[in-house]
Image (cartoon, rainbow, N blue to C red; front, side, top):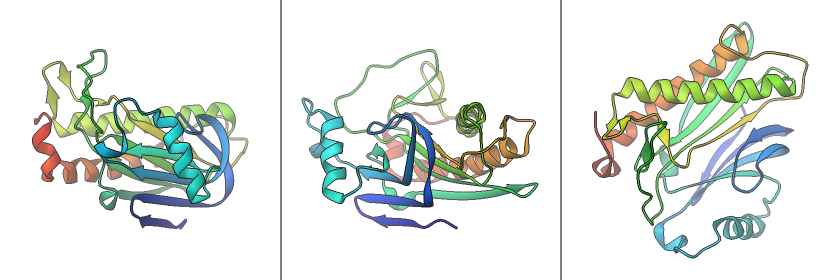
Length: 220
């Protein structure tokens, strides 16, 4: 299994080899090639109101020698990262989720943003199956669906509706280049991805609900 290392304030997932990674990460959004997926834990003092967060993160990555990585930014406690693995028909999916819900939202509505660093949901997923570009996009949608399914099952609610995510969620899907054309709910890759993400998210939500941060956000 690819190595996961927590070296505060960083969490690093080594993919074992450079491969395509699809995300909307702050530093390297879109479809890029990377060997590592990183998380950078921050506090309010790290991100004053007038800070260019993207430039700050670029400088942090440069200092670490990791400008080639895809990186998440979060105020979650990275020691609480949750992992899950699922295998279906010989296809293996691994999910690592860090879960914070202090800036939770209900899709289709929007609450006022607060000027502070927030916990968020960041999910990195690796898949053993080689994917085409279209299947990679479909795989990302399955990860998002599984994230939201876990949140709905938790029963957490806002005045605007059920919690479906946060205002700063990010997902990264890493898989070799390949010819698989589909990764949806009817496929083995989609089933493996969904199961791994559901398991990791369910544990991450439970950890967050037991933490002090849960006092700052809605309860079911």
